[in-house]
Structure formats: C-alpha cells, structure tokens
Length: 393
Image 1 (spheres, rainbow, N blue to C red):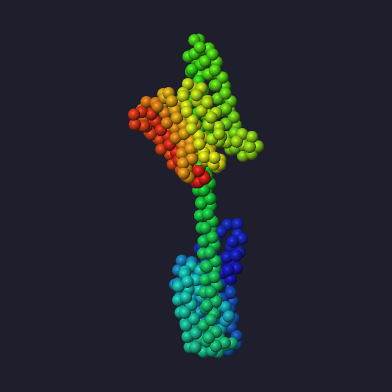
Image 2: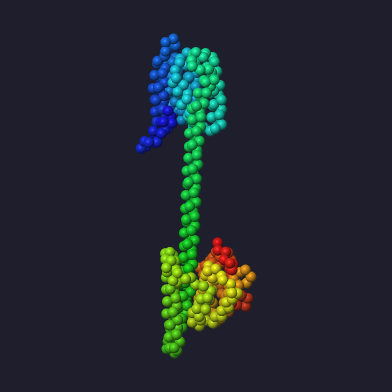
C-alpha cells in the first residue's frame, strides 16, 4: 500500500510534505483496519473498548512514523500482539505494524533491518504460540506467523536500496557533468592561449619589423630616397605577409579547411624568407639550418619557426643589436634552436613579457624546454630543444 501511495504521490504536480504523507497513510490504514476490527465472525471476540483503544494507539503512532520509526514499530507491534492475545481475528489487524516495519527498513540501514527481522519474527511466533493456533492464525502454524513480518521489511529494504542506487547514479552524473565542464573550460583556456600566442607571433613580429623599416624610410627620405623606397617596399611586403598569416590563422580557427590548405602553416624552409625580411630593417642576420635530411613533424617545424620569429622580434624591439645568429639543427634525437645577438646587456621585465612566455609555452607543449638569458660579456641567447619526432602534450 505504501509503495502504491508513493507512486501516486510522484504523479502529483506538487510534492507532499512528510507530515502530510504520514497523515494520509494513517487515514487509509485506519479505514481498512477499522473495518476489519469492527466485523468478527461468530464465536470470536467482538470489538469492545479495548479493541478500539488499541486501534486508536496504532493509528496515532503512524502519524509520526517518519520521525520515530523504531518507536512506532514497537507501539504498533504491541497493539497487534494485544489484539491476538485478546482473541481478535482479522487479516488486516497487522496492517499498522506492517506499515511501521516498512518505514523502519526504508529509513534505516541493512543492519537495523536484520535486527528488526529477527525480533519481529520471534515475537510474532511467540504470540502465536501463546494465543493458540485457533485464535492467532486458524489456517496456519506459528512458523507462518514468523514469516509475515519479513515481507514489509524485505520490501522496504528493496525500496531503500533502489533509492540509494538512484542517488549514487545522480551523484555520478553530477560529478561527470562537473568533470565535463572543467575539461571544457580547460580546453577553452588552452585554445584561448593558443590563439593569443599565434596572433602575438604574427602581429608582433611583422609590426615591429614594419615600424623599424618605416623609421628607416623616414630618416632616409630626403638624403637617400632609394633606401627609403626600398624600405617602404619591405613595409608593403611585410604588411601583405601579415595579412596572409592572419587570414590563415583566422581560417584555421574557423575550421576553414580550404583556407588552411591553401595557406599552410610556416615550415623551416621558410626561415630564409623570415630572415630576409628582418635584414630589411638593417639588422645583419646569419642563418644555419641543418635538419640532417630528416623529415620533421609539421608541429615541430611550426614551433621552431615561431620561436625564431619571436626571438628576432625581441631583438628588433629591445636589443639594439647589429648582428644576430640563428641556428636550427638536429642534434641527436632533438631539434636545437638557438638565436644569439650581440646587443648590450638588457634586463627582463617582471613577468618576462608575452614573447618569452609564448616561446616557453611552445617548447613545453612539444615536450621540450627553452632557456633565455644574457650572455657573459653582452648579448642575449635563446635556446630551445624540441623532440625531433614530436612529443606534443
């Protein structure tokens, strides 16, 4: 009956409070048990004041079964035993104690349910023996009287186990959802950093080179117009290159496969063009490229290219150097990338700036490492070692 009531309660547009639930269950039990207590067959004890007193105590106890299930089970069990010992016979007189036993199992744990099963079975069997088979259970032996209390306990144990299982599933779902949200945030953060790094590498390098070239053109505009004209041509070339790389980057971010295929990511073979553009600023750059004939992964070549690009950008912006040596060579199982300039000693601002951070992130992402710092006697060196086989993390 309690199971059916719970199923009906879930269909309501609003949930019932525990107090109201106990009231409704007590009312239904009172109706069924009262009808059974009021009607007795000939030759058996008829209902009197003691019958209705035990009835009232049982129904009143069910009103608080959610708060004190153990006490309610004891009270309703005593009333049921009193009916049997007093000589009443009825199939529904044990209904209050069955509801109480069910509540005891649902709101407890397995250990308490086992203890209640042993006590209830022993008490029921003892009452059956004392009251007499003809009075307590005309159609069965005391063994049957020991079994009926186990039915509501077993049912309550099944319901409680199912609730615990559903709660565990819900908690697992919440944890999985939280893990998915954390993973999504992590991927978004990684993608945001990657986008910022790509845009920084493209814009910072090109704009820095264009600024130097524009300044050179401005200084030579009157005295050396040919030099100024050459510098402005280089500005235009650098601008076109920046637009092309930005278009490529944006196309990749938008999953534009056609754009990405038309403008592939920079490779080591394009270092000559990069160095030539830097030379247009008046800086002397030497390049040593030796891959030993090995085919390097695209991600490794891209990381190496970007590190060289950012290092040259830093030289243009901060070093006031005259010469830069760039070396990219396979050493053992790694690709060594080294950029050295002869500029005066310079300090690194707190936080290192986005350029050094971006280079270090690229190297770390590929499974390598990067060192950057001043050289003894002046100058600055950036050295990164990347796995030649690509170990991107």
